[in-house]
Image 1 (cartoon, rainbow, N blue to C red):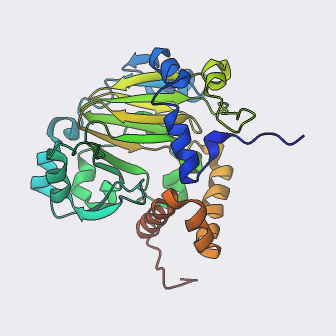
Image 2: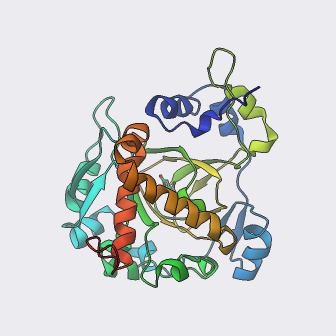
Length: 318
Ligand SMILES: O=C(O)CCC(=O)C(=O)O
């Protein structure tokens, strides 16, 4: 008998909308609300972090790691509009129907208006702020606990793809996903609050006989290790690679995703990156069709990677 597919891994729009509906109401939404909180630890050393969280792959909210970050003191929507207003950004990049380019100043203006009745909140997702302006990079110095990130060795000193800024309006949602290319998530909350619901890589959404998702089974499955937390300014969330996460903004919010490649994931990481680039190069139209929400995001990541690696896209063999 063929194994039933994992509905969490549907990448088409209806499949993703169905999974998202489970977090709005019903047994999974109820279980998420009541789920245990991710453990919080204050001022861990890098060695303690490695032994107690990174190696055993245990999520944690780290406190006291970014107290000296200029971004924690200075960043805000008006600060961005006043200092970096002319930067071009893609707003709502994770929604192909809504994604649009504008200046950062225009984005902040939009954000200051309330979404219209039934209208979706605006969300600037995955902006490669370090690649956009080196001055912004100075506001978010390197984290000691993130030194294991192997991407610097792999792609070069200037690498900062996956150092992403997430800025959005209350109510904004990033739907459930796993991060690409097996990177660990380190998410630093700088302004406002957001709620994370997370599940272990072993989580599986089975379908019932009629094809509908069995949210109750997922909610009750101990292997899913459903947990939650609310991040506040100064918190750093660590999630090992492949952990599922869904994020909802409880207020207007700014956070930074500083991803890390654990050297133990290196071979698989390279295969996944190569696989994605080959799909984009050799089967562009079909990938656009099968992954409408991911296509532009994947292209944008690949372009940023090329820029940061000084790749001349017109030369096959530089
Ligand atoms: O903050 C968000 O909306 C999503 C962040 C995220 O998915 C990440 O940092 O991996």
